[in-house]
Length: 232
Image (cartoon, rainbow, N blue to C red; front, side, top):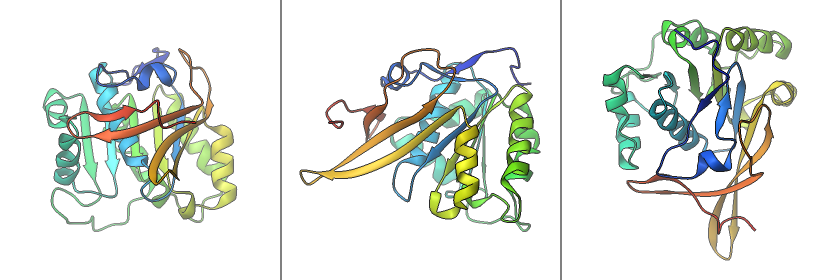
């Protein structure tokens, strides 16, 4: 069952300082958007949130449209996030549109279908990666937001990773205007080096200080690492 009376969901872990840099916790009953193009780090942010929240006794369901369940677990294990243990403990539910190996579902699945699934209803936090691929094309943005807000109002937080190139500009703008948390994943080449930055565009109801721009990198066996040298 969801924790309807909890104000926020902590995601801090000892491996990194992301929690201290980004508000300590994600508010409950919130919509959070993680936006960026291919290779910007949307998926790793979803992985980091699932790892951090389950470490703080938050029940998480994650849907991936990019990897099989086996591939996802192998990927996160390579960076030190052993989520198979969280599955065994019952705090984490992983679903892939490709199944365990590489068998896509017979029927097309939309974002609305995922929100109605038992795994979503039972979770405190639902992460959908990439949600932009699953948004119904014909659905007006106001109707979409009405569905998303009904889902979060029941005591859950919804985290959606979004590729802006896959969505209508008007719909994405309406979603950003409504969301409590908006992260824009940015990349730039500085001095011949690729620099990755999380731009915290919006963060309402933060439980702690929020740094507007957070440099980061990924290290084997350590995962997401805040890189203070990466932001000018």
